[in-house]
Image (cartoon, rainbow, N blue to C red; front, side, top):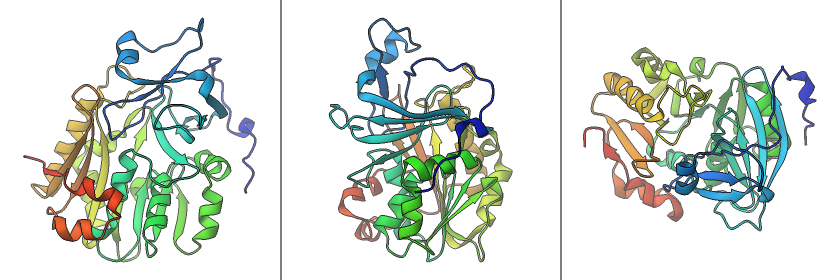
Length: 319
């Protein structure tokens, strides 16, 4: 396993609280993940949010790493296996102050019960060829693709080298690269400049910064460039967030940003755009899929049984 460089090599001046409480995933259910603080500690979770979300006692969560890189406020949390919560036994990667979860992995199972499992439904509906993962994080999506589809080839892009170092140290990325040599390639750089020879067969877009979708995704010109990077029959599948995503800028609403992003995509893809909505009105999350609606029977035939339910959840953007 590759040793992670000292956090001091990435450190900048930051005031770190003694314990971190709000943790928000983008789950396939309405409930979010939050930590219940130890008695006597002050925290930033509102009473309404605490009542709405399922809590994890802080004593059941261990901080494995915490430091500020050039691009992110990085924390790696480990949830106890004894905890009575769907994320028990997981490791979580947080990259912003509000605590949105960017990656999750379990020691004993590949699926995550989050939107990442929806990402893993893409291969049966795209042509042969490399799959781009824009916003690689700790490699959660890549792991699912490689383990579920023996012929999948993944090209990942991540802006922050420190995130990849953390992924190799705490999320098993080094082992994944070793076990799947020639099938996984990780690039450090601007994901929106990603390219592949003869184009990507499919692209997963999961680009967030400071707790919100990156602003470029609200620009139709970005989607036109990404469309041109696909080979014939290729598709994009995009995490467009929603109200469950908490931005560092409290004036930016996750749901409004989601709608702006979908509108920008619609300008480029027209009605060949499908949307899958998770959660409820208070804590929703959505994904988008470009191209015509696939044949559902053929799609589900190419999926593991545990993922087939997601194929039925897509709806036309105007539907």
